[in-house]
Length: 116
Length: 492
Image 1 (spheres, each protein chain N blue to C red):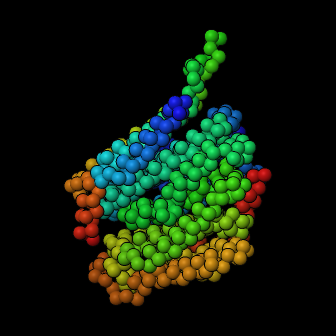
Image 2 (cartoon, chains in turn yellow, red):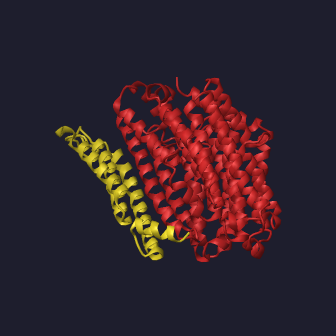
């Protein structure tokens, strides 16, 4: 159990994030949930790259055990993507608020149904 | 080294930010149009090269795979490149007039920027031989799609985009998890290398989890029922030419990813014998065919009719994939190509009608044929191809799909295909009935006029190809044959 602590944490965060995304009515909370979900995946990648007791992969005769840097690099890219997605989502929320004067999904739905 | 593969991506990718710097709408359009037609030329060159030597491998930065990123073109992605760049080129020719009417002028250069980014990223998804690269390009394409849909005039475009963003991001993240697990298992991201190492791991639970995450993620991207929720609103409220571009290309690229991962990475044995994914995909596809066709009959907006019909048509392709026989895969591959052309043609005709009438509601468009006979005629031609009347492109795929089903003696499935074709007759006829025979609506009477030739000619051109590829089937079937041989032969 403790050996896989990180994976359990990833799993918990993933479900938490997905639940928040699906269950909240507030659009900003949805975006927050989405962020938690994505972060859990970053956590997964970082965990798999880390070797216990390993250092950064710098060629030096002192060290023989290295962590794998590739997953970390991949996740840098994924973080950039996630930041862009969040920015776009928040920009959309602002424009939704401007035209619907609400960011609650149920209000928006009611407004759309009232006005075909 | 042959530089064409990298030029194919770089051309639109470099032009995109340049487009954002241009302030005049005219120049932005000209730049985007030249680049898009250039991309089509490159795709044609690559296609002729693939015929001689397949696959073409390009090492980015000179780093040999599996360490470096590889661009890899075989007959499957060469065909998709041709489809994507071809539709992009035709649509952008028609886009200028339509966009000027539907988008505020200061945003138009940004529209072309997003358009080029979308083109570049879809090319990237198809061309790359690296699994992680697929994720990155997938996200670029999603982000630019969100921006394009949100440019729609109706405020409902915003909420449609937001919902698409939530679902699309969840889907892409699932694909990312899958790629992460595969890397953890094999230590490689190169597709060809993955395909070599994975067969040894068939019983492995992590590999099965990776497959599950992938199928779920890609099903959202493909808009497979019941995960299709984002598609109808997205296509309905997006600017008309955006719908034309997306309907022909975006979901087809996701289907390509599905084909590539199932056959090229996980392998036929694993997907269809160890996991038996057909038991998941087939019911979902059948439900999608029936629900999508049924929903299309009851819509009051012409774009929404076409969007639900897309849900049904995409399910045909997934059904072909799930059967995984030579005939059914031929049907799927040809249908990716044919349906891309048909849907783009239909949406371009709609763009022409929306241009002059200013609405896509069926009631507002009734009697439109009296004012714009050629547009409606082009719509009708593409429409009968959608139904699958003999001598049209749609017929070939339905024929092959039914043959594939009968090979296994699955008569109920054959019945589903026939019933859904009848439903397609119903929804296409209902639209044509409004356009042709109903009395002219006030809007058509007030604004109805022949749409500009720049929209009409591209739309008619695409409609013509729907007939052309229905009569001259040698080109598409020949290409599909090579693709299917490669797909099924890729795994031992």
